[in-house]
Image (cartoon, rainbow, N blue to C red; front, side, top):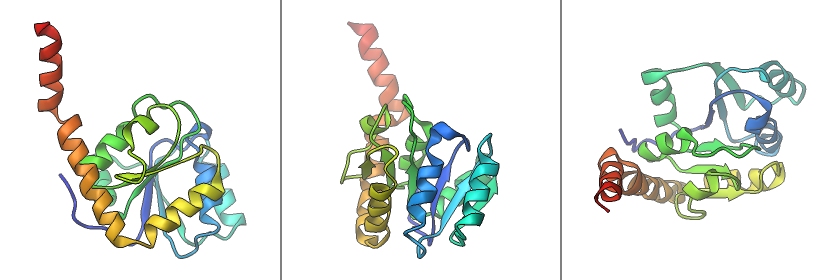
Length: 179
């Protein structure tokens, strides 16, 4: 369900592994001490990421471990927006579909299927994969403009409803069969 709540933190959720670009996200966060980041998930890079956070004294970053179902939705729904910093060709990340359906804007890497789902400047922002400085600027811009967050969230929800709903998917499949 959509959330009209835009809280005091941003969120990454997914596997904690190198190809997901989380180290880039953490580097971006070093320039944003006023922005809280919640990392949800576990994976092969978790220890390295926790050590980076400790060494950089990133008090604005927290790890929650793996969350599923209602527990995951609760944390994402209360966030301000979602970040998808992947550095590999994610084909069609479920994270974006889920976030949009909760009316959450997404800042994502401009590669693979991510750039096909996010309309830059309408329901989120795109940044060059691996570019921590650009990611930091995009996070800061969205974080500091709650009106834009709300507008992007509304646009994200509209896109989810108009393009990703089961009904729309069913109609598209049936149109293919009718040809």
